[in-house]
Image (cartoon, rainbow, N blue to C red; front, top):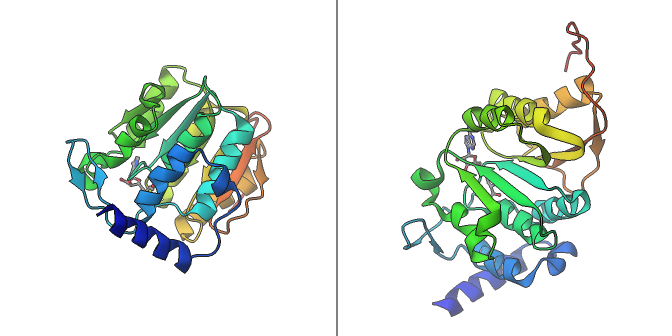
Length: 238
Ligand SMILES: C[S@@+](CC[C@H](N)C(=O)[O-])C[C@H]1O[C@@H](n2cnc3c(N)ncnc32)[C@H](O)[C@@H]1O
């Protein structure tokens, strides 16, 4: 069985562009986990049983590695992601967290058990970081205001949950309220007009955010470089 998944992983590697150099720097435990995931080997769910995955919901290494690099450069005490799914992106974050012992990570996904058998929520446990990982099986629309109400501060946010314009835009707006100066927010799936529109809003309207170039076409990143001093009438078309 293991042989079969190894073969699949090798085929996947062969069919893709070379892995980014960062991939080799990921902790071995995380690389091992990712290898079985990219081979779409059945994974452990929240019920303790192995489950098939859907074969498409994931972040590729060409975007996971910049996520790992940006997290590592930012060294957040608290990071957050909307959209856990099978936890590919989470594994890149967990890999970075292994080098930063005081950090913790929050993940939010209302469909974790309904659509993903709870596989994403198991990832932290598989690399020994369960105690530094908090998962909310609710919509980010409910969780983010609550975290803000509890005075949570974050230094890193990965927005990859509801991909509709209003969902991504609201995720950004709510996460930005908690993001410290120097913190980073990252968006996936810039191939989608809804995500491009959200990012265009930030470029045009949020002078407190400065765009950071990323090596991946479908990934956009911004660093918070000031506070939001907009007048109540402020609006720039986007
Ligand atoms: C593209 S997938 C995320 C992939 C994941 N980041 C990875 O790299 O493996 C999008 C996820 O967003 C979740 N989602 C949808 N609406 C959401 C919401 N309102 N709040 C949080 N997550 C949401 C979906 O259940 C799905 O798991």
